[in-house]
Image 1: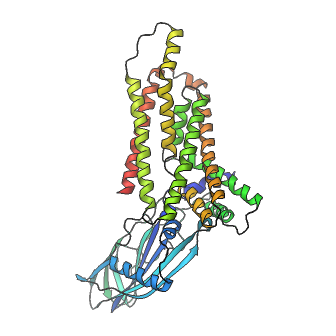
Image 2: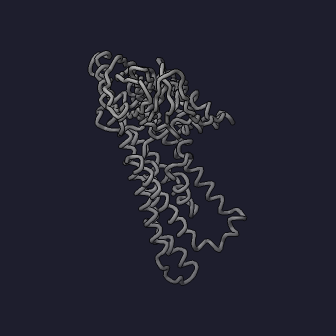
Amino acid sequence: MIAAAALVSVLLAAHPLGNFSVNHYDGLTVYPDRIEDLAIVDTAEIPTLQNPPATPLDAHARRSCEQVRASISGSGGGRALDWRVLEASFVFRAGAAGLRTSRLTCRLSAPLAVDGPLGLTFANGHATEAVGWREITATGSGVRLSASDVPARSVSGELRDYPADLLSSPLDVRAARLTVEPGGGARTAAVSVPGVDLITRYTGLLAERLDGLIGADRLTVPLGLLALLLSLVLGAAHAAMPGHGKTVMAAYLAGRHGRLRDACTVAATVTATHTAGVLVLGVLVSVTASVTGEAVLGWLGVASGLLIALVGAVLLKSALRPKPPEHGHGHGHGHGHGHGHGHGHRGVVALGVAGGLVPSPSALVVLLGAMALGRTVFGIMTVVCYGLGMAVTLLAAALVLRRLRDLTFVSRLGRLRPYTATMTAGLVLLVGAGVVARSVAGIV
């Protein structure tokens, strides 16, 4: 049970934009005659792949740190700080699925005279369009911080050991205000570290296992089959996760008349759409750096929400349309089903497309890792298995919902049956509007 739950929670640990993230840390240290900033930029796999260094690493580090310096602003006692780069380094680190992450470290300094109480401000405007963790700390050496709105200790170990819920609630601290005075000691601001549940601790191990299978030096048949099985399970777990409303809405609409054919249509459409989306985005990301992954996912989220809302609006219009008087049970029953079948089928397909329109970043990373290792066909197979796993969850949900109709407590709600179509349509419309609002907020 623990292993199964941990497999499901792998998707919880992976934010839709985690592998696109550009993470920042600024460690401020105030001295009597200067202020220093240990500026670190930890870049995830996909932006690292998109922006390889065009020069030797030392030159690339220096140029990148100059860009960081230019994006930093600050003041001491109302006068602008004049930052300069003291040290610069750039290294690659092993990432997911055989890809690499990168770490830029810059030590910056600006002259400062702390001969009395002094107010300091600091802001980092580097890569503001990127999604990621942003953290600032501040300490004093030979001076005392009498006030600070940032902590003295990094909760991420300077971007080396992120808290377990990094991707669900990342820090977003881009500015700091300090008050320093001559003398020793420092005020330590309290920092809240979110709790870590037991199941979440397994996510890293399982993710590393799948990444290791994809990036293995020698890919044997058993290892390949295990990787495909893991992709299938993770795809099923992804479809069950909340966020896009695809599982509940698609399965309910597919099963509302008890037709397994509709459920299969939704499952197949989601699988095909998701697989195609991952493949197209994978090719775009690997061949050009002009494609910003998080922006693409955001706009696809908007399109998905609009499509869901459109389906809901059409269903609502149909539900509110006056019904012609029935001329008998047999005629009315057959006429109703035959007249709306084509329209209902189009709605089911549209909902399936909406459910699979936003590619999963975890599936994308696996594909890119396989492509980087020359295993493109195997990478495509893992993406297809991921989509098949999503289809399995959708089919299971549809069958469960169909079964619920026969339960006693459901049958007792017969008086609400005339309003079921209207309530369902309204719910689908609200879910679509919610997806649009959330996606737009992520883009803006």
